[in-house]
Amino acid sequence: MPEEILAGLANVLPKNIFLYVAGVSNVATLGRRFVLQGGTQRNLAVVKAELDFIQKHYHGSGHPEVIVHPNCCEAGAIGAALEAIEFCQAGHSTVFPGFKFLDTLHYTIHRDETTRCRFCANHSLRTFVDLKAAHAESATLSLVIIATCERGEAESTAVARKISSSWKARRQSCPNYVQQAAEQAWLSTQPVSTATGIRHKPIVFFSHRSQATEQYRTNMHIGIPRALNLFTYAPLFSAYFESLGIPAQNLHYSHFTSPRSYQEAAGFSAVDPCFPSKVSISHVFELLRNCKREPLDAIFFPMFDVLTTPLEGCVGSCACPSGSATPEAVKAAFSRTTDWFREAGVTYVNPVLDMADRDLFKYQMFYCWKKPLHLDWQENSRAVDTAYRCWEDFEASFRRQARVTLDELERRGDVGLVMLGRPYHHDPGLNQGILEELQRLGYPIFSQSLLPLDTDLLDRLFGAEVKFGFIRSPLDISDVWKNTFSASSNHKLWAAKFVARHPNLISVELSNFKCGHDAFISRVIEQIIEQSGKPHFSFRDLDENRPLASIRIRIETMDYFLRHYRDQLQEVRESPLDSAHNSHFVSELAHIACVPTQGQSHI
Image 1 (cartoon, helix red, strand yellow):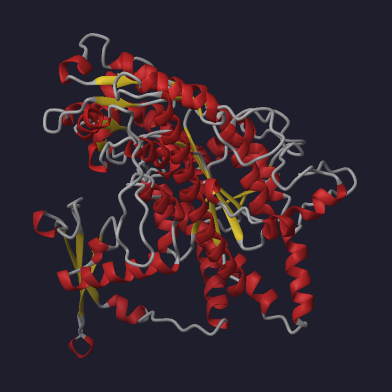
Image 2 (image 1 turned 45 degrees about the vertical axis):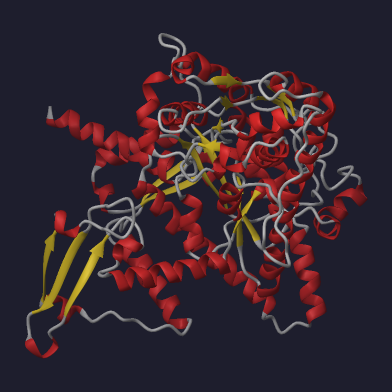
């Protein structure tokens, strides 16, 4: 019935606004007074649906106040006019041709195979809009291209190359350490000479059966999925296998997550866990399918029990139980009716590993690979030590680069973004390209896992709290979270504290649908950031759906607030006050929320 369809449209509107665009489930976090604007508010059914939604999802003290803007149809235009006034007052000029010109403008639209983009592998359809003025004296003809990415907006190969060159320059000036870590974690761990740029042969450990062992391992092929905590520990395992004589080219990794690869393997799952766990099935499926072209001897997908952590005083450092059990669930998915591993002639290796206890880890790896690699204990032990050293060097290198970028932000009074997420959010298929879009806008992107840990920086940000006895060290989170047993949750909370205390950093939280750990700590993270007086942005319940329109709206909104925040930082830098006072102001800003006022809990 038409009325039922219209009622459904009215009911879904507030869900789109609050759950998908704003990304909040408790509207009380936005305040107590809500003003409804926009021409849609002329529809009383929509107003009723929004009122019901706000009242149902308001979990705070008192009752929400909902007001319909008296000029709801014109409110957006009034806001645009105010923004234009501010824009002009800042010294900018308009390129608007005027209403008379627009009245004489005609356009044609076409979208077919002739408009398909050929400048990248996506081959997306584009919309071309030809514009032409009616009067000859100012006749102009231009081409407007509506595309899904920057490269698709090019009219020719030359323009596409120019866009690519500009994007390359932007990536260098505004590094995305999340993406860089995701790309480099899977590279060979062979050291590179800083003088010659030539890779040296890695240290290789063999037993007394060296000749036979070397020949056997040289021909060994191992597949590893790009999934879950392997985004953190891939350099460690690469170094382990390479140091035992397995060539780097014999380590085969699945590709980054894509909607197509996920859909191809979606039917194998026997359970319905969180999205990152479901995605893991597609990575193993890709490795199995590629066995027909490049045979594998083993697929290595470990179950992580305890993870490493730089934090101090935590109750534990455990991996997520759902993620830990995923390799076993994947094994069941591909042996439930047909044994895919046997048909592919591959051994599925999924040991339980403790990454924090190196001696236990040595035993676990030895027990796992003793027969497949003909190991003895001594070479296994040396290989593990080498692996940890290479992994630590990998992370230390990123932390040093992050510190350089952070110092540059402080020097310029600019803003950087910190991704508060889990290791698998380094996967561009799981972060849905959100971080890359923000990088395109000119914001460097930091990963919570690779923030600098320099003593001078930590003392500047957390020294006052340690001095007053709120925490035992800069790496202590017991003041904000007592149940410190989940490693990734602990890191996320500490990174939120780091961001709250650094004036040049803003947080962007990522979380997936059905993430039980994030359901508990997300509100705590919001409180930590909000008490610092900063904006906090989040993209929650990410899954296989990618609502491009709502993501772009939110990113544009974020950019608006970030530019205003950056202007505030610039005002502090350009203040006529003496530099010593400015330095003191920035220091005080960095310690916002360090000392609680009376009646407040320390956050």
